[in-house]
Structures are given as structure tokens and as C-alpha cells.
Length: 216
Image 1 (cartoon, rainbow, N blue to C red):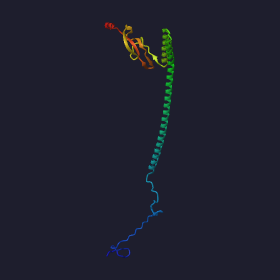
Image 2: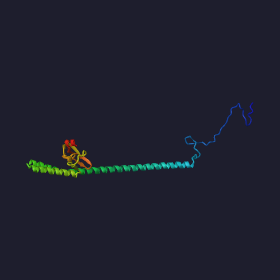
Image 3: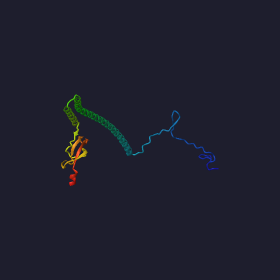
Image 4: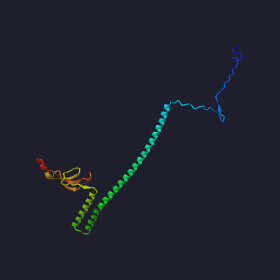
């Protein structure tokens, strides 16, 4: 028989033990009978104060960066709009200027057309050769004046040293030593506008005689 008997404070180890456990936790039931184990108090923050301040500063800095980026995007879009508007105005002004210059050039050519019409009428009416020649001279003069007004400059070639950048030598001829390498005749006048060569002059260039070179 066990030393723990049925007396006070003991039990027989052969008999089943009946242990009662009392749960002292507070249990709240809602209206639907569900258990609600609500915390009694908020869990205190375990972060040091300086960490919380650093996080707050970081959030403030991120918000500031977003504001700056938004402002930058607004200014960039505004600048883009102003640039597009300026480009449109410049293109419009350039188109208007080109149209005015074209109109002025055509206006300067109208007297040339008038002289050509007069020369044609004089030829049909049986005018003298002298009158027709005078009409042609007037037409040529009017046309040259129109070109000069448009900024076109004729090139002076005869008597000038041959320049392959301005002259197109289509023929040569023997000349004396004083005219060797110079333009002695012009077949078609050359023209330029500012620094741009519109057309090279077609010229005849003087060359030294073969006899003179043999003597040398």
C-alpha cells in the first residue's frame, strides 16, 4: 500500500487523479458569442527617441523631395511650352520675311518683263534694228538692277588673274607675257551672293607661247 493513502492530503496512486485547473484570464464574449481577447494596454515603443526623430526627419525630407520634383516638372513643362511658342513665332516671322523678299524680287523683275514686251512689240511693228537693240539694252539693265537689289553681285573677270574658284576656263589662247594667266575674254558672267558663289564665270584664259617657253 502506497504511503499516500486516502487520508487528508493524499491519494492512492492506483486511483485516477482528478486535477482541476482554473483559468483566471478575463474572457469577453461579443453579441455573437465570439471570443475577444482585446489587449489591456498598448504595447510601448521599443525604439529609442533619436531613431524616431531620424525617421520623422527622413519622412519630411522625402516629402520635400517630392514637392521639389513636382515643382521642377511644372517649371520644365512651362519652359517647354514657352520654347514651343517662341519657335512657332520665329518660324512664322521667317516665313513672312521670305515671302516679302520673294515679293520684292518679283516686283523688281516686272520692269524687265515690260521691256521684253516692248521689244517684242517693236519687232512685230517693223521697228529698226537700232530701236530693238536699245530695248534689249534696257531689258538687260533692268534685269541686272533687279539682281543687285536682291543682293546678287556680278563678278568682274576680264583682265583679272585666273581664279579656279571663280572662273571656269573653257578655252585658252596664246598671249604675250603681260596677259599670261589672265582672263582675256568672258563668255558668261559669274555671280555671287555674299560669300556664296552662284555661278562661276565661263572665260578664256591667256597662256604663254610655246616658243617663249622653249627659249627660257
